[in-house]
Length: 316
Image (cartoon, rainbow, N blue to C red; front, side):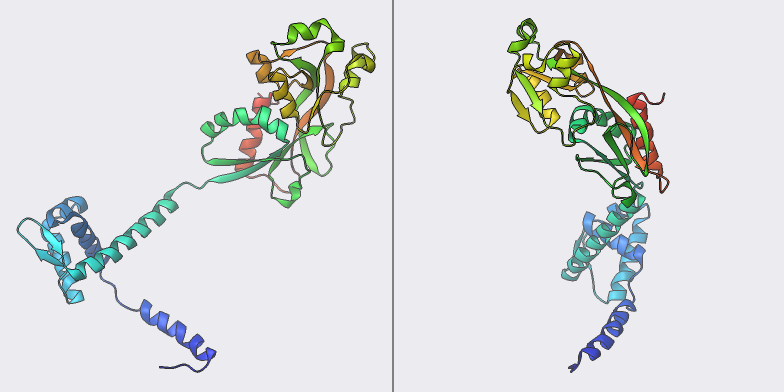
């Protein structure tokens, strides 16, 4: 048949597919018996796997052969072998059963929830990431995606579920919960701490850039004034990094003294990798947990929110 127009093809295709779908397939029990016998090479072993008698397997396969009007096995005394037609059918049936098994396994798998948490790169690297192993162990059905960025996020858009930001707590249009209050202090590696403490003018300073400078002064000049000194007493220059976490790592490596968040170096201080070089400690800003006030959180989002509050000490 030759079709001269596209409309002819469009009208023919549904009829053709409908014709294919109306073709009668053998019973599933017969195909299961055939697949097992073909794979195991034995009616007896197939019967044991399917928890039926060998006679039942033989009967189902004979019915299948009669339905297809061709032999599928060569029967031998202690085994069976596939015919050429049997091998063709085995390839198709095995593939079909494998596809069905995979689909059923997927349907039986408990549903997984995804929660996207946005936070700053330094907070993610130094405070959050070390604690994620415990969360994953406690909540294996929640996939927590950490979005590390200093850029603002739109919680109303729905692409981010929760955010942790550093500031004074003024976040219009969202619900903000205080998580952690911060302090800044100069920290130094124990390897150079004795030398650094002897002479302030000899300090090798480590700096980092604020992506959005805070209203509270948290730089070296502010620390010098709080210490009752003139900023000019501190040495000029020094290494500068674009991320606070890199400045922390430089201090750990003994490259100098960094004025950084004590929250972000709590692990290094605990392990003795860093020490507070000198007083005073500067009061800083706070980390807040933000969520949309326009729609209720999902159960998984609430679980992550409760976990963050618990580990930060916001709730018991």
